[in-house]
Length: 585
Image (cartoon, rainbow, N blue to C red):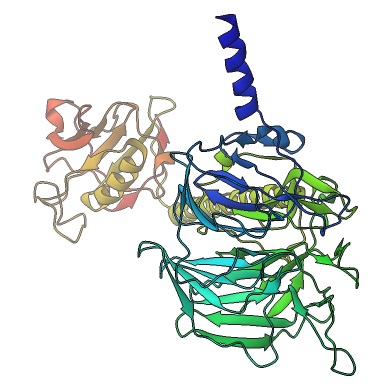
């Protein structure tokens, strides 16, 4: 029993805790939330001629939290399919065709030919299936070429690269794999522009329009004859393609075009670099690459390793990356996978000529900044080519500056809103004070108030024409309503009363619970003059019925009732349209 436990633990460590071997030119792709990497090569101190293909297959789960220095141990080794012959093959291509399948094509392993040239991997079953190469007209597998999936056509376009035993010979034809037609092959009839050679070590990126493929950089191989044209060189010439030579292929009409970039002459020529489409902007991010400086056996990483290419203007813009101490830096033969707003830079040969197995995270959210860690939970569900980002190379702000500006902007907005509210409050206060002052001036010089014997209480006598204003002010302070349905449109002392009569002289008393209109010269305590902005006219008449104003607690409404139901005070007669100030009674 103990034996089986030990065996299980050993198997678990081997399969699930495997550390990936340092390599370059492995083929990597994104399936759902995992990065799959197949094979790759190991070379001694940057000597790319001495190649040893690795028979390895791993994936990295992006749903876990990834820390910069700990990611190497997070790779999971995929066990070999016992019913399928797997073999190492560096510099092949991996092209995803769904969320769980990708196609591995070509590669080089030092033998005359890779046995299974094109094979399909299913991540649900971890099984391989060979795709026949009938009608492809290949003598052997292609390496250092490119493959581009055109989703709206359900086709993969293969172009360039070398074939056969090293140093190999260039592949001039464009072959197409039809994904929706039982993986049938066809050859495109397009002809390269005059003076253009097939490239290898270049990049191929589908434009945002889903039609045109952009081929950037790379090398060409030529075997020129000697000076007397009698002998041919046994060692081929290798020349780097200038970055201003932009080769495009139209997948609809199978036509080629060679176009010139106006801004590339200052760029280092390169091969074994990467190019990723940024779907939101439609631009392409160029990373890394190598230049051989005439030494094909020992290439070196270019120092200007990060550019943004605009397929509309054909212009390059050099990008400054931040937090370089935790970044990948110059390298070549690496892989670059875009997941949402983060570019994963994997493996390759660094500027010291060392083969690596590290993984770096380059955030493209606003500015290019290297991260110490990555968490998929902060982003949307990943997709192969549907990530949105707003990366702008002219944005020179790092994350701290962006956070600071964001906080400052919020504070400014809060202060602005506070200032506006304060200004509104000040204006309203001034208007109320002005209205009160105008009212005081209006009643100045009018009849004096009549003192009574109820201290600290203000009493008024008003006519019907003041009731709408009284209702308005009362509603403002008590949320009550006043029924004026029986009143005419024009209010005056002589013609308007709540019951259609001819002027009802009343007193008003408003307490915290009720409001009452009285005919008495000594109404109860209640209504304060401070509650209204104008003083009502005092009109008393003993010849008219008197009403009182009573608030209903349940509904907040006001009703008129004869004051005899409330008070038996006898009203006294005064001048008809005189005005009184509030009197302390």
